[in-house]
Every structure is written in structure tokens, then in C-alpha cells.
Length: 140
Ligand code: PCG
Image (tube, rainbow, N blue to C red; front, side):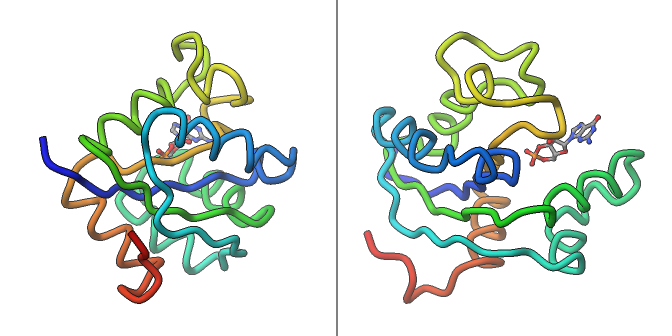
């Protein structure tokens, strides 16, 4: 598997509890390199656009309100098999199902307030990176 990039969000429940450094350390310990990183405040329109694929889900409104409730940290992670590696270190979406040692097991509060987002496939990774970063901001 070649070097790959994936997109990550440290979500409002985690930035609020000052967990940015601890979560970034988990990525680095897993062999992922943080090649771009910025702390931003999403607008409601941006949250709705980013999560557009979930617009018909019953939790869409709650999800978008949560994502604008505090700043987030958006990052690009690079490494061998980065998408799968990041999903492994994040753990299952619902912290109740997440394995020991994963970010969500350790830090997530609920299925909604689950501390991190990570891309699920190469196509979504490319789209999500382009949504938040220009090429100039990616420094391998
Ligand atoms: P993410 O960011 O990877 O992509 C979609 C998000 O929807 C997911 O993480 C979860 O945080 C969120 N989500 C999934 N199911 C529920 C739910 O039942 N309630 C809420 N509030 N959020 C959910």
C-alpha cells in the first residue's frame, strides 16, 4: 500500500475539553504524519455542506448544531494506508463499540459527540481535504 492522505476533524467535544494535543499524539503514535492543521469555527452553512450526504438522517440538525458549537481542528494525515490506519486509531463511531486504546474509547462522550471524524475512502478523503485546504497548505 502506497503513502496515502486522509482528512481528520477533532470535533467540538474534544476541543472544548482541551484534548487536541492528546488526540494528535495518538495519530503520530500510529505512524500518521500531520501534514496540515488548523483550528477553525465552522458556520452552519459550511457544516450543512460538509455533512450534506447525511441531510436526510434524523440526526442531521443535531449533528450540524454540534459541529458549530465550538471550534474544530481540521487536519490532513499522511502515511502508509492512512485511511484505514486512521479509522483503526479512531475506533468505532459509537464509543460503546470502540476497542480499547482507540480515541473514541478513551475520549468520546456519545455517538454524536464522538471526538473525531475521519474519511472513509480515497474519494471522500480527496473531497474533504479540498473542502478545507488549498494545495499550498499541505506540507509533507
Ligand atoms: P462522522 O463525523 O464520522 O460522520 C457522520 C457523523 O454522524 C458521525 O461521525 C457521528 O458523529 C454522527 N452520528 C451518527 N449517528 C448519530 C446519531 O444517532 N446521533 C447524532 N447526534 N449523531 C450521529
